[in-house]
Amino acid sequence: MAQSKEIDVLVEEIIARVADRWTMVVLEALEERGTMRFTELSHEIPEISQKMLTKTVRQMERDGLVKRKVYAVIPPKVEYTLTDLGRGLSEAFCGVWIWAEKNHARIHEARKKFDAKGER
Image (cartoon, rainbow, N blue to C red; front, side, top):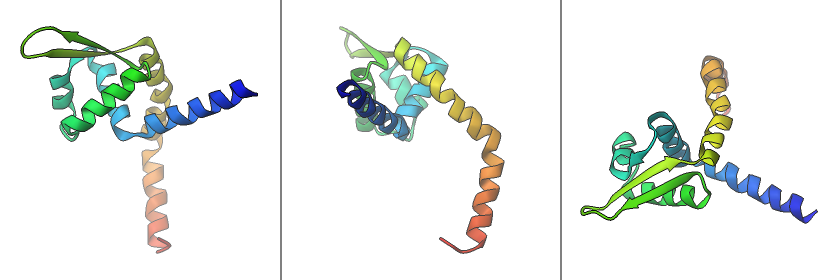
């Protein structure tokens, strides 16, 4: 039973992490472009602050989703690469993007109908 509870907690943590907007955006950027420097990531995702990007990639590194490589140069050079675990998560959530792409018109229409009823 303890292992089941442990897995439940882990699943809840991972769902919370991927529900975080920035984790999914960083995951997508690294999946599409491969290894990226910190500055490249920040340019790829201009809406994210440097502080939030740092927090996001550190948490992703802690979870084993990205590998961080630091080069001892001036100015510092840091690169991020998806790990096999990160690529697996990306594949798992690719289905969500496909579903959203396939159903976005239906969702938009349902929202329009709901809003027209004035039940907000």
